[in-house]
Image (cartoon, rainbow, N blue to C red; front, side, top):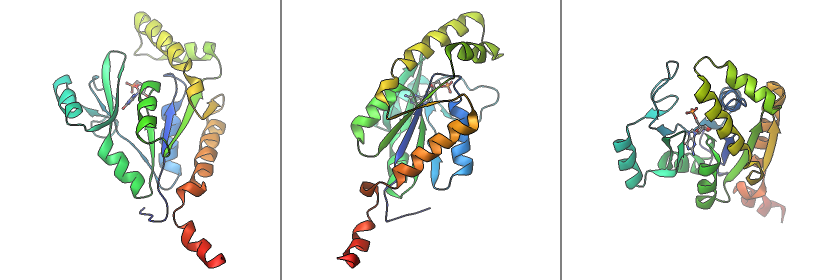
Length: 207
Ligand code: 5GP
């Protein structure tokens, strides 16, 4: 979708791992028109169910550093000991074309993006229904061993402590409801006057 009458926005969705962020992002891509998910670059190992170029661009540390030096990232962060980065060119050209771009990134990246494009960013934080529920969800993941589980819980608490840097906080105790809340946020933000260049042309006819 190319839309000259409006500039797209960057919808950042952050949460501790296990709060349902990925499901919400996927639903947005599948069910809402005019949105695109930004595919990040990471140095972490590909999981079995992941596809290179679809879930992430998987790179080694040397390749990642090179890209970083070439100024290819809008933001980078170290999460669980691995590097992650959002590709600048793609995101900026998509919003220029009127697409809304979803970023599934952490609080460190969110801060950096806000510095680059303060007027084009909308920040949503997803919370699990409770810390007990989060423990259940993370504990149930087959891939997590005990040490890893503890580390993930401590990372989760750290991520949650940044909730107040976000415009919206959505508690995911029901995935459909949480998804609808995020969709409502996106639709309202799309209607903002500042994002609708075409309005000037229309208003001229009223005056
Ligand atoms: P995972 O490795 O489990 O897919 O993601 C781990 C964490 O890294 C998640 O909280 C995810 O939101 C975050 N993340 C994924 N891609 C990026 C990125 O490009 N930048 C930043 N800052 N965080 C990211």
